[in-house]
Image 1 (cartoon, one colour):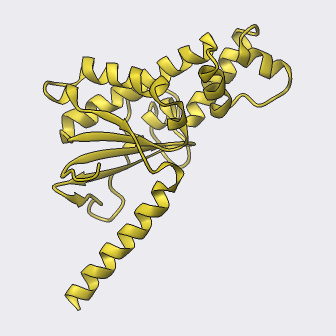
Image 2 (tube, helix red, strand yellow):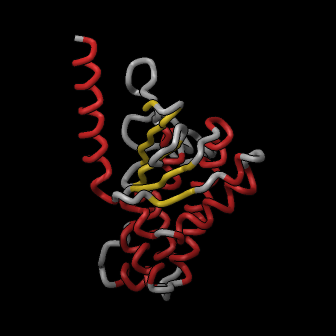
Length: 200
């Protein structure tokens, strides 16, 4: 998102966090709690969300690393001959990381799970694109280790669902990896310090 005036950023791990740059400024909302992008509902009667969220069918409940693991365990039970089924039979954890490793190794069942979860993510991205019309949507967090296995189905869903020209907004992987949050927090602290020095 370097050099952009308008950008959406999602970080996908156990949950889904979000951030917005609107008009060149970080959007915080009226009390500082804005941009809870993981808690947009994409399925009215979907599964209950995590933590203290009272909603159902949030993108976090359907496309996070936790959701990927839940789908992976269900697939392992229903398809014991898959790589995930073998992991389950061996008593090893079937979580989002295991699904990612299996998909990267070419396991058909795991790849299908990324199609499912990536498509769900794309439903949300289409709405973000329509609402904010960003220059770019950046996706980071642990699940981005899957790369295009996750992003390609999300891009296809965005292209099919968003209005034009928003349906052609690029969706890219974050470049800073697991350090992004730490770097962002340091940058934000610096911005706030500079503001207070100017005001004082």
